[in-house]
Amino acid sequence: MEHLPLHTFRRIVSRYAGERKVQSFSCLDQFLCMAFAQLTFRESLRDIEAFLRAQQSKLYHLGIRSAVARNTLAHANAVRDWRIYADFAQSLIGIARPMYVDEPFGVDLRDTVYALDATTIDLCLSVFPWAPFQRSKAAIRLHTLLDLRGNIPTFIHISDGRVGEVTVLDQLLPEAGAFYVMDRGFHDFKRLYRFHQAGSFFVTRARSNTKAQRRYSHRIDRSTGLICDQTVFLTGKFSPNDYLAPLRRIRFRDPQTAKTLTFLTNNFNLPALTIAELYRCRWQVELFFKWIKQHLRIKAFFGTSENAVKSQVWIAVSVYVLVAIVKKRLQISASLYQILQILSLTLFERTPLDQLLARSVSDEIDDLAAKQLILFD
Image (tube, rainbow, N blue to C red; front, side, top):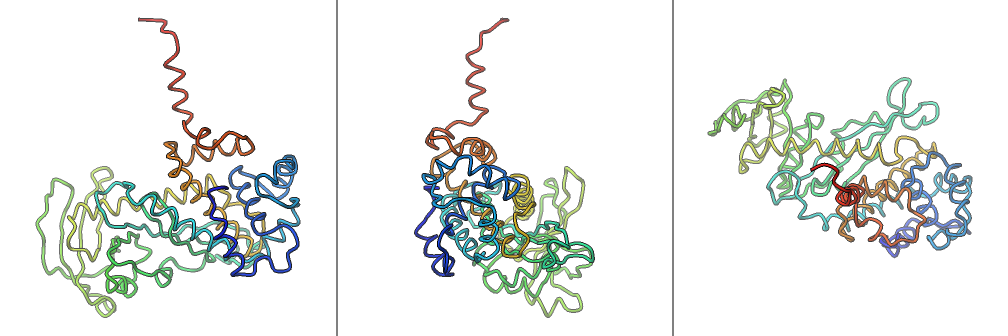
């Protein structure tokens, strides 16, 4: 917690009047309790209360200044403005991204590359009526823009399950010179043209019913799996009016799956094979969703109100980014998964973090194995 910018946190709390009429259990207490639940994989408010009360003598030194009761924590989650934790997560993201600016991600490219996608978290409609999805089902959808250098989420929008993926393009501010990699769910040429006008580049898969007329074919090396590299103009009923500029169409046969993939992009400078590699890297956002669902508490919620759910998601994102910051500042070679597993068992130990996380478990096993006696020559 010493790596948290507490002055920024207090300024955000003041901005939203988060502690108005609060006599005890501050917003920081709430954040620390919820962060503790994320790091130790707690299952319920009662679970959090029981564990923290068992360590009552250590809470003050951890920054928790008030007694922890599940009713108090539940009330705080329900009424404290979730935007406090959303803004704080964004401030942590602003700290983490420069640390990973030189991190490789699989493609030799100096420009910023984002992967855009959404994931759905199923809920019970009778418990979460504010998040309708289907007739007998509720859900929330996490729209995420992931910086592929370090897998840092730079934009997250939480909506109910009925909101379409493509609508999130209206909320993004295109960054000139950056690449946005997305799947066919974001196929809206009117919205994509706004990115083109802003000087951004996009890479997406073409739908089977996308109509385009070839104007020019570029040379390719078919031994790499490329089938064609063409300059095209859209010829659909509405597409020519929505997107007025030419597009680049690349067809590629994946040697591993033997599937033929068709990509559309507004970038005409990169090699065709690099465009295909960029789309392959989009899979990192799918792995990010899988990772946070497995290792953070965002599938089982401690509250049922919209405010409680959004607060928990944003605090989970803050914990994820904070662990990424600690990993870089302390120059830890262990993965985020290994760090979380170690922290989950050692939160109340007095060992400094740099010593605790200096070596991963696998390194220790290798060191021990090297000291074993040789039985056979």
